Amino acid sequence: MFRNVAELVGLAEKHQVKIAEIMIRQEVEISGLTREDVLSKMDGNLTVMEKAVERGLNGVKSRTGLTGGDAVLLQNYIKSGKALSGPLLLDAVSKAVATNEVNAAMGIICATPTAGSAGVVPGTLFAVKNQLNPSREEMVEFLFTAAAFGFVVANNASISGAAGGCQAEVGSAAGMAAASIVEMAGGTPQQAAEAMAITLKNMLGLVCDPVAGLVEVPCVKRNAMGASNALTAADMALAGITSRIPCDEVISAMYAIGQTMPSALRETGEGGLAATPTGRRLEAEIFGEPKAKLKDYLV
Amino acid sequence: MKYRSAFDIIGPVMIGPSSSHTAGAARIGRVARTLFEKQPKKVKISLYGSFASTYKGHGTDLALVAGLLDFDTFDERIPKSLEIAKELGMEVTFQTEKAVPEHPNTVKLNLFDEHNEMEIIGISIGGGTIEITEINSFKLKLSGDPAILVIHRDRFGIISSVTSVLAKNEINIGHMEVARKEKGEMAIMVIEVDQKIEDEVIEELKALCNVTRVIRMVE
Image 1 (cartoon, rainbow over the protein chains, first blue to last red):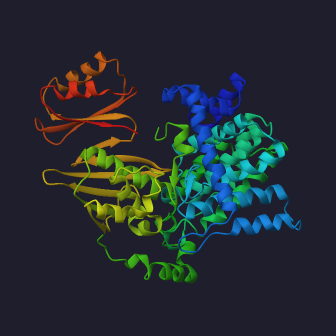
Image 2 (cartoon, chains in turn brown, orange; image 1 turned 90 degrees about the vertical axis):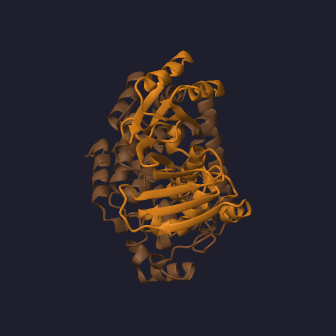
Image 3 (cartoon, each protein chain N blue to C red; image 1 turned 180 degrees about the vertical axis):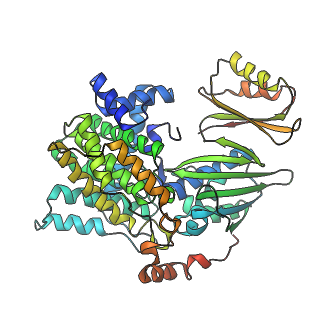
């Protein structure tokens, strides 16, 4: 079993296989399931992601009305041909947004690695798909590569906003996506690790400050930026750029930063954007009174 | 390692909006129900830390109750769980606690029916993964992996009787811990296993001297 990124890359290099393959083999060993079952389970998750993107692109609204409909705006804008940052990047962004809008609307999604950060991996996958034309198997592999890197972060740092801030959620998701994009585009395991490091470095310190404690503002737009960060870092790694700080050390730094982050900025809805005048006003409108004063209630 | 499977990272498939505060909460509720071995008549839910400050926004309350009703994380009835609980005659009360817990996402569940009561503390550690950290004041660690819980009298030889039954049935133990409050009194064994445990094995364990209860935990 690999414990860090260096070991993961080492295993892939030693056996001359993709990172996805290392994750699949480990899963077979740990779960006791057959290889076929493991692959088909992930295929099922891929289908859930596909449906969530599709549903979000048709337009959804959350129960509070705070989020929904932005994925549609972006798709229309891409079609107008006026987009400055390139259609693939914006497609990824819109699909990441679509997924999180469905999540906020209490729809069905696949947590990757969490629900609040569920948009980044599928968003980038279904965007690069149009250019790289992967087989269904390769799309499933994309998710195993993401799982392998997420596995290392989860065990060595955190993937919980309450424990480590948004860097642990959208940051981890973006790093996982970047590594998977590199692998799907034909990059080496080491290049995948570089992409993960470059992405995560630029997510360090990101706080978790959801308005009214809801996974809506700013979570949906953070997924958008996570997707664009992942694509940029993947391209950088594929261009041959390396991270001066090794991936495992970036993950350790993320953990240390999370440990020193005040509780108000770790998914309590007490600090950051949640504590802005507008954040507080929205909270009062949604709940009738600020949540901090919410009385115990009886069902 | 806290996380063991690729599906802890890519998964669970769930009703939004939060893996820790919605899906994880549903799982804690469901494990609590399994431990209670039936649907409780009354549940007192105490929320701590981030659970206490953001439960309404994340639907943590809906999810915990959904779990207690035996709903999975992707059950589309989750948003309606409070109404369903009322219809089914399960009385639920919530309270938020000021005490700062060891883990920010902590919940204490007190389950009751006419004859039994049980206190369970669970934490949601991220991505929908959970741990049960306390049952009736016994400190332990139950992660939601296939496991059995044996409640027994604290006597010599009991551990070896239990493990012999497992060995005889070719069941491998991945992790095991034993907790007791006082010497010679009630004790708990948590045994995580690699294989599926058949009903006959559970019955065999229940028949052992000094074993009071055996509970099977399945994902």
